[in-house]
Length: 436
Image (cartoon, rainbow, N blue to C red; front, side, top):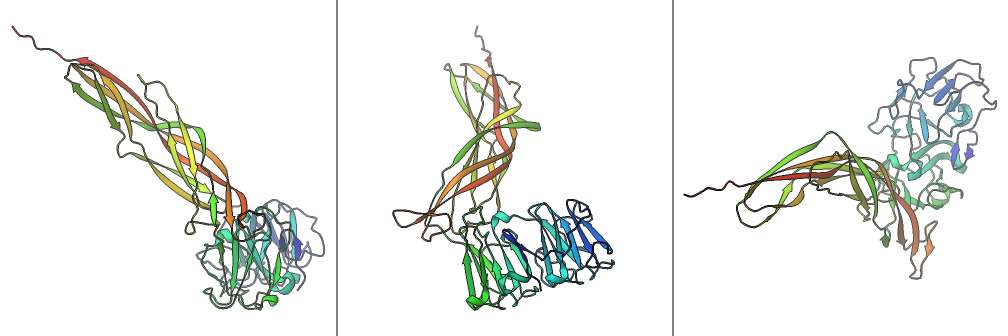
């Protein structure tokens, strides 16, 4: 098999001997029958609804089934298409159990070529799946041969659960992996490759080699050097737990526009039969709730606490938005840590207290209008300080012997928030009974 090409930070399959001079539009993959650009071909267009993202597609039954020799493709950055020997429909579309030999087409926004003969997958492809990948969450590549040569699989950790062994017992590379490439593992990720499909048995572990968001330093390992050649049947990844974390809450103010049909009213009535002014406190919107969600990337799961200002006025002005204050508060525990993007939904109680004065000897009627505002897409970013007992890439040693790793935490907040309370009250003197 030919040598794979190092295209930092990925390895990609060997390129064709003749550069492609034709037209390959963004999003297209073109399979050619022979080792020349004039041979019969098949176009797979990822822009077409015929090939939806994250759904396995098949070209079995076409003239290109088990016939492709050269490939040209033009995929955007962070788009990967994996073509396979066999057509499979696994629950996880990125599980290539039973798929046979695979070839990863890793997009970079440019036209690229692949020589399937040199790669080791000539005349055997019949389907595949393309998807948008989150490379910032860490990934690694497992190769058939030492020196990052031969067929390989690129595994993006965001597509797999944390802390759970992932079996590759039915993958083409099961018990055949001989080397790995891992420059984009992110601190504090720890990757473990195991001999058995359940994660047990002999294993080898590697961690990040570069600070978060960088990959300038290559990171490769021949498994022969660790006694794991042709033994990998599963992988798992976890996070090294910090000794201490310091992440302050951060608040932003937004205008949450009130949508049609998102305002409801409540009426408050009563009587003040006394001779003194009566101060009344009542609660409106009891039991009414709205939901707001936050999606957090980077290394740790967070929660976002949302609060909104309350406006109480005489009369009911023409208000079309709510001034809302969004506060993201962060917490990190060993049980909730995640290297994947996480989404949380918070249920907010809208009930609010209203206080007003009622004249003596009066009946009163108050009308409260409670409005719910739609939060515009809002990003909240805060810097987290994580202290570890290990010297992780990018960390700085502290006086107490720990290592400080500073990294950004980003929260994207969307949803509904309330409430804006508008209140008006009218009082009517009580009718007095005259005595003769």
